[in-house]
Length: 231
Image (cartoon, rainbow, N blue to C red):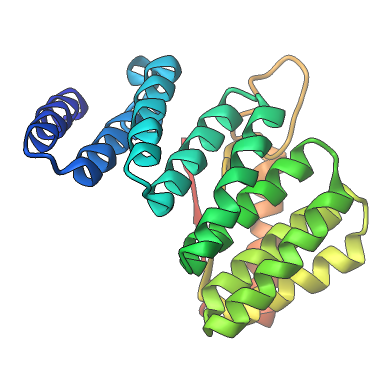
């Protein structure tokens, strides 16, 4: 019940402000902002309200000198910008978040911000900007001992090489990721192929590709899961 959750967020933030617990108030305000864009259906999306609430949280975080919370606000703003295809603005907010996460030594969030910025670069066709960000995150996740983080980074790099037309390099990276991961999430897979005159959803070509992918993975990497969206 998203509307009820938003009302509870609003009430909690107001109470925290009255109690002088400004960090909690800002954190709740940011979460309330996220409720207008994160995992919402179309009827509940409101990017303008999400941005306004997140900016309010950012201002409060800056006033109380909470750089860590400030970083999360910038990360949320970057994601809102990205969802609205305002990629330059998204990149600027990600660039602001990254050093703050590094200063707070939150390397999990730091890595997520690096990957978000690298995907932003891939979308904008700036592959040479994205590649060093991915490699930096691979090194960070290896130092952390996070196999999941390394695999996630390798899959983003696989996407980059596919965009660059480097099919062999992409295949190697994909297999390296599968060696570390128990499964792979296939995002927006119903729209994998395009065909004029259709809505491009669940085309036969997509089903054929997924059957080949499943057979290939089963042959090389038994017991791996493919988690896909289904419409």
